[in-house]
Image (cartoon, rainbow, N blue to C red; front, side, top):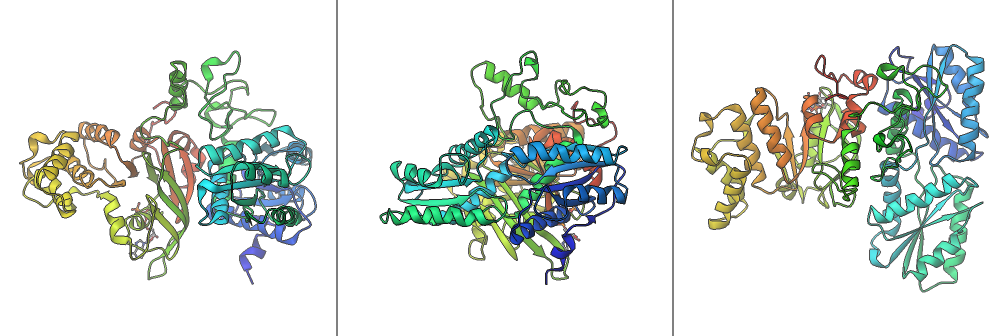
Length: 591
Ligand SMILES: Nc1ncnc2c1ncn2[C@@H]1O[C@H](COP(=O)(O)OP(=O)(O)OP(=O)(O)O)[C@@H](O)[C@H]1O
């Protein structure tokens, strides 16, 4: 018997905290017991990712407890602020009507409690990743050039939901390189499944995956497969494969927590999470691309620095410099260009980790389900308190440790005992202490050591070494012994040595530790110029902000946040909850 599952049903979890609201996860509800079980599985994931968070789950209709009862239970525990996150893929009538209505009733029952409503899971990169995995599993080894996908939604009379679903299909094919992805709906909206299958056929697909874009199971999934099977019978020359729905994937629990943080911090994005194109609001042109605060919105006072702002005011310029600069570039006719270090959604995947678990022989569970994707060319900070699991993750990336459960891929190569040696070459780790790395009599011979081991000789070796030394301003020091250099110079030399191996992924472990301000700046210049995908593991949060557009935060063996570094560092409640401290007086919004 799965005790955790029955524990997660109904009831509340955690205790109310003074510094952050409680969370109510609101599902649609279903008469299907498996659907309801999957909802509780997702609630359980949320609790596992953020064990301290006071939360409960409930339904709009058809299953128990109701969302009203879940809210009452949180209040009975002492909650004074509650964020409601709809566990719904795309918002339509039920969320838009019943979601706010639930909170309106709750405000009447509990006038002293503040309620906020967060967004649906929506068009989020993690939602796309889950859908992408389901599609890939369904297509298997079919030739992508001759494959098509019919992604099937629930169907709604709400044009926003239908439009968002079509957009999501488009993003899966445009941005993720999937073959033809055709939207279809099982009820209310058109096209229907047979029409979309027919369109795939006409576009030249010989293998077609029919994948339900449903969060949880239910009677409609069988109907989708029946319709696909009936169509397939009329087209025996084609292969039609039915795929799984999204299910209670841990990545979706992380999206739910991100929505909670948005609702909590008043940082609801004005555009979708994936858009590089930004909409100019008439009269607010200077705010193009900035997140617009919706916090006050009639839901009681806002928290924190933006307490006194009205919903129509955007945060001050500089909140999201990245987006601002993008918009400026757009005006010069270069809209959407990806800047160095940022994710290019069209770039190849450099690192893909899925559901990675690892326990040390003494039973310490260091990794308990890590999922992350890093694209080629990205510069990403890996943050987290002591013992979060960062080192253990790195030891998997370079093949020193083998996954006990889950998968690790570097530049398309999966980690196995057979490939571990190869992966060690693809992932270059620059250790915190350069003296662990530099052991030859001169900097030049140190930098040459790795490439020479790879078999490079003569002019090719000389060229590789000179290039690496030039990149790091070490040419004049090439004949100097490492012990005669400063710590900053030794650290640059260590980076040069690893870069000379031309790794697919460069990992820098605490690169700024013990450096004086000048050496720190010089190293930052070097890191910014690295041509390789870079993962920077650090407790130096200002350095992470300076160098990495994106941060991944780990705690208790899991990824608990993944997003723009500035946004994560500015989330005071989140930072405190995970023992991440900014230096006194450091304001990530102003930096
Ligand atoms: N060799 C080991 N044997 C047993 N437990 C270990 C071992 N190495 C790490 N652990 C445990 O695994 C968990 C994750 O540790 P890890 O070193 O990966 O964290 P970290 O995020 O790198 O921490 P730090 O920031 O302190 O370097 C911790 O609970 C740690 O005590």
